[in-house]
Image 1 (cartoon, rainbow, N blue to C red):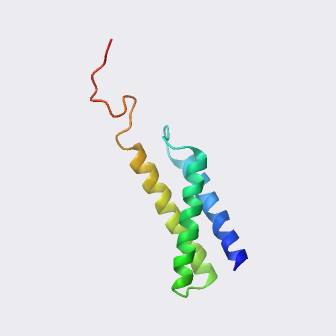
Image 2 (tube, rainbow, N blue to C red):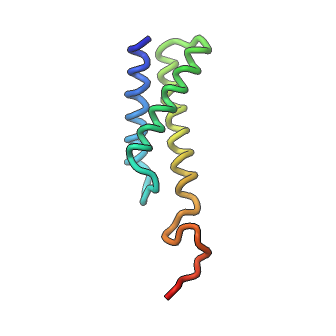
Image 3 (cartoon, helix red, strand yellow):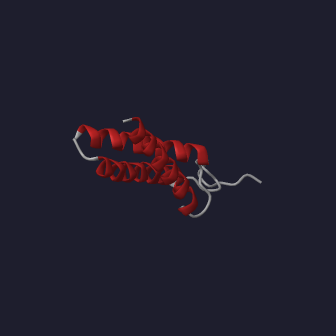
Length: 94
């Protein structure tokens, strides 16, 4: 069981790091947060797959998918609406 959890952590860290490399442009969240979200998603996906009685390989694939969804969702939510001007209405003060 401990080995499986370690695999989930490794899979989540790899998903977080790859997502950081694959997303074009400036990302408003840091690389550490991206990796932590990947790890949390992988562990959550692995626990859910284990609760459903899936095998180890299926659990790792499920963890990979949940981690990727979590990282994409966080990146998309933080990127949308954040430009150079941020939350302001677009009026410039000179």
